[in-house]
Amino acid sequence: MGADCPVEFDTTGARCVTMLVKIRARLAELPVGGRLVVVSDDPTSVYDLPAWCHMTHHAYVGVSHEGNIMRHTLEVTPDSVRTATGRPWARPSSEDA
Image 1 (cartoon, rainbow, N blue to C red):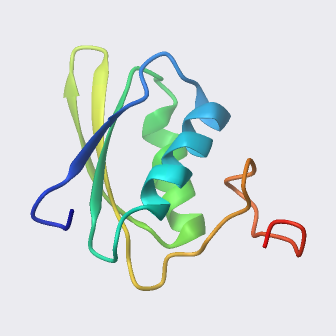
Image 2 (image 1 turned 60 degrees about the vertical axis):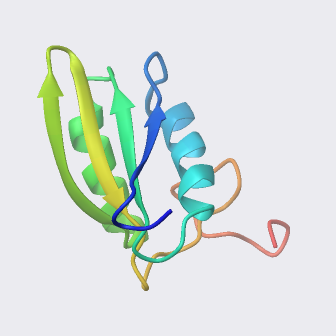
């Protein structure tokens, strides 16, 4: 699973926090350069995912639209920041380690 073979991850029906918790776990499984294509029907995902990638230093590659379905491509970078389990916007505390 590398940049040449992106993993598709369906999050339709999930909203921001739930979606980010699931995405965080999937990205943690990928190597540097690995890409995750997040399928979403959440209209706020076009704002949430680029902002989250910026905060965690993942690369937000882009989005394509097919009706109300969006496919966001995210990439793990060498500088990606690990976030807390269950709190995808926060760095882990000593309890999360």
